[in-house]
Image (cartoon, rainbow, N blue to C red):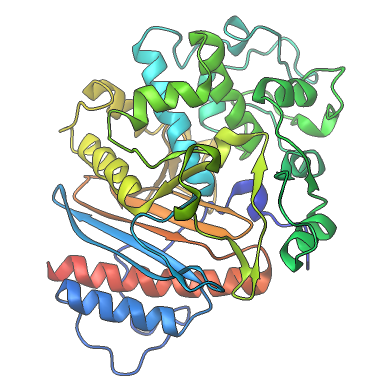
Length: 417
């Protein structure tokens, strides 16, 4: 591997080109004499062409406009070697798009009266978590959900949260890559509470001053996966319910997302996509002890239900998960101008990025790269799931090329329909 990858720390929080149709874009996969994309058939034809001109094993797309799914289709393979097609029911992890499910859980817990954005997290947690550089500065829920807590990801410690599941073959090229390149071991998962204690408590094996920033809570933006999972643990501590169960009851079930879960154990393994380093190198099944920040497994069909509800919430037309005030809170600009995440978004809601006229979150982990976004009025949006990797410079370039081509095709389709 070429480097220690930033994408595994931010899970690929990037900005794609939504609604920026530009046939001269250098990052777009070239296609000969493309026909106008004025129908679902034309979009399907264009996306098949993009597939055939790329290295992506498989992908799925859903497009929503004016409260309807106007396109939903999958392309390529969930399993290249066995010629298993990627379908709308294929499940895969979605990387940091999972943080928007933490956002939903936080807002739901706020509506249930468990805490507020202004609550000191140490009024909720069973043990005290402080930045030792600022021991008297309270860390608020607001800080966790906007990446301004001063709690950081130490890259070496965070990689230790990843692990290949027991029973996976360690002799494959993909397993060797994770072990030798990332230092990922084969072992069982540990509870979220135990991982966070190892990381944030002074006697923990993963505790280090590298876990903490040099600015006080609220003063600077630093994307943190582990602090995001700490936000999820607040829900556990406040409700007495595991985070997985809380999300299942309060988010997945109301939206009829019956084929979505944290980890594959609760899903049909026959529907799971293999994740690929490249088209010839499938990765073993792995997990992450800091699971809330990146480990929602879902399908094109299920995630489209979630996208549709988020868009209706932005329109102020949904009450499926929260009151309207809850949806408003999700997408409210919470950062002052001096702490906005340069290069990532103009502002931030509860984990959601507010990027110009769009609301979005992307996600990536080894072998998976995904995108979900919609316009700020909730009128049009789409999701893209892939079982491709974006962890090296070469893989990153291939992802951006694919994402730009798909984004432009979808934008043309939406404008024509």
